[in-house]
Image (cartoon, rainbow, N blue to C red; front, side, top):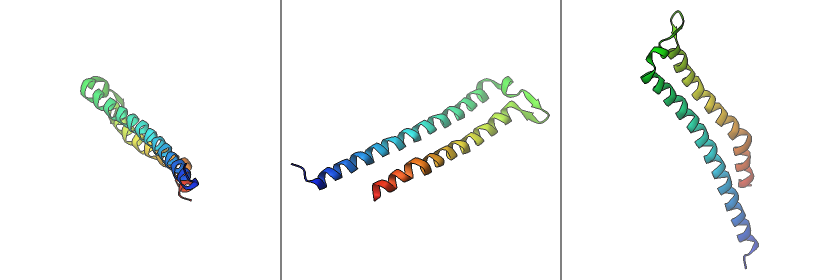
Length: 98
């Protein structure tokens, strides 16, 4: 028969594992979005040169705009992760540590 201490340790272990799986899912999802943005841009850069060379305004081509979009998108994804971590992950970790 398990003692109450062992049951608590087992439940804590399950909670830590669930939290770890959740964090991994969020990280993988955000990473896949970043990979899609980057490789989408690079694929267009390699295979759609006329499209990427489209001039939108004097001195501004579609390529420059999309390149800046990839950079801004990476910052946005970072912000999404920080907000998620501050609202959900960090409080859950604090709860487990107490």
